[in-house]
Length: 454
Image (cartoon, rainbow, N blue to C red):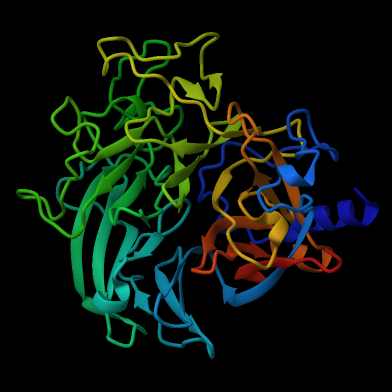
């Protein structure tokens, strides 16, 4: 690392906007870092090993698409127009098109949303047939609603809205509540939404907050090594899980349907569960049939999971691949708990200190499928809340086993000041990637482009 780069990174850390610092549920302060690749983080030695077929990309630039934002947490791309919808934590979704950002918001929920820390307007997704039906789905934090205990923090809300025929704004009184979940604490709310290639809606839900998946609102589970918690308990509530629902149907008294092949249908557990064992899955994404979920760690390790139907991803028995709160821990549930299912390892893990790839709160990204940066094609690009002008890139190992080699991709010096903190990522229909974050000039949405000389 050059002296200029080191100085630039110190400046970024000192001046980056910190209003959204708690969003991803970070467990500690800024982690110290080495300036060289740590063992296990080396990129493939041969360019032919890169999914893009070129040499590993070491630096990228940022082309700012939307600026003047406060805390942008999600971006959705209209399928029928050159238009983007950008959700901000405090309760507004902006419409941005060829002429810039419209003065009139796409949707204004500031009178409904409670925002601050890890609460707020947290996610947005367009129905797969949005071009025809104008259906929009939104995740937000609301004051306690009926059914939420008075000792709880707030209510998780998933709602559907209808946009106008021109797609420029939402009809405000079109809201239909799809799902409400009582939230015991103010943190670990996850908040993302993603439609899969099956047309179903995938809804990540955090473990209910506090620390260690314990305390008020955390159920007792099968594991005796650590008290709690919701990540390993699938019958008491919908917390600590990834849900899969059908928003195009109704099931009994529910305002949504449940797919017949959800793993717990007809078994002991809530039918909505698709996978479980999560702490705070902060951003999910699809690449074809592959489903990626980044799960924020407690205080030592961050992880990214390649999610399978019925998978148990370990929290709070494990944090990443490591035992949490105990010297040893099982690799499976007991035979009496769903037949002794395995606790699945993540595909990416990094520590809070001690490596070039390190940080405090993982921010899930997307697999790059664009044309602008051929050397990134087929690479999972993600980041950390404490971005410090860095992105991360992970590629599957050649033999398909074990943790994926992960490396730092620096943001070019002239653009790095835009990215003190990463809050989210997006991918458009052409496969190009966007990073949402805050920096010296506030919040923005930035498209990844080649760096000068790359």
